[in-house]
Length: 497
Image 1: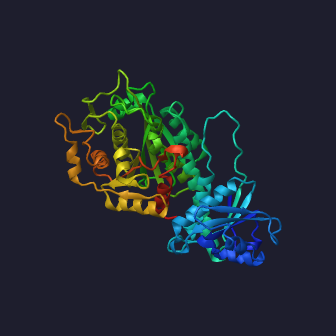
Image 2: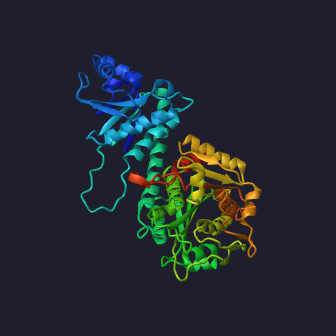
Image 3: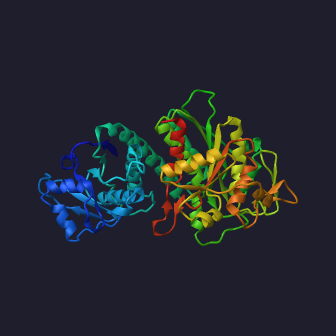
């Protein structure tokens, strides 16, 4: 896909199709009005007759119109003028790209009305155009044996019309947005694969593939023997009920001078979570292939850092395991000594992600990080608290958590901060070990974060619970690619680019 800017008049845009906006009740947007004057009122007649009411998400492709030399026009609904803003614009753009993707149109000039600059400046406009285009045209990596549909014909998108002073900033946004869309596709492709293909060893293999593609990346994989030497007994305990061997995957992006403290991203990579002895209900258990979405997001974020050559040192750590019920599986009541030396009483084997992260977070200390950020589909409790709209944000560094929340707002990949005060850690009290791996029904997402906090003392640390945002169920079941946009924005701002 090629993304370009354009600054000519609407009717002379060099593309097969021009996309313009129409507000609800038939009011033409600015570019549509300009084009209408050149088309002898064709668009206003369509609007006045009620043929296209301009509701958000609706589109209409018009055939050949006079004075457009065979090019076409796509109308996209912007909704009510009084409530038009960034959200409505994103919906209108996504609907337009989806409509274009169903045609043989190869190039399109986007001339949709934009929200005010304080809502969507030039850089984020460019970024959103490329990111939404990539996300909308993404095709799920299914394993169906029938004839595959042809890929979308659309290969060139022009963003504008722009004042010439804005073109460079928009172009930078387009470049970053395209890279974010590619990284999100990495996450989505990994997440959508079934657990019998996307195993811990497969994740390690994909990390090595990335390292061969990008010179800035270095990969090290710890096998079961190496994990034992590192005393990662919590991670190993989760894996011991599975025939699939565990892996710890370390990916380094070396974009800054040696010795500069890196950012460390840690991802939960439970490639299938049956719950272990604390077996999950059968309904929707197939979706537990997405329990490695945190790991996929880390791999995606490192691919993004390498693609745009971020001047940062970034380390990705993935704890990859399968959680299965077996005669060798860890049992409720077992006590495990973590690599940090702290003991954990296992009260529920389905609270396994925090065990994997405990050892992975402790491993992060050896990099002397500037900050540590973990992401995990950690708790159903976070879904109850926030639904499927916001990821949960926690941490011991208020400024770092605020950075992440602000990055999510800028990237339209929102997160919401939840409290993490000392009282919640008290729910993890155990009579037999330093603490238990669950803290009861109340505040489950917070007590899970409090558990992780026991392994991050002295670090600048934040945690994203993405259980409600990493994938969607139903007819459109599949990975969403979140929180890759949030992570990309966070890294871009840390890099100052």
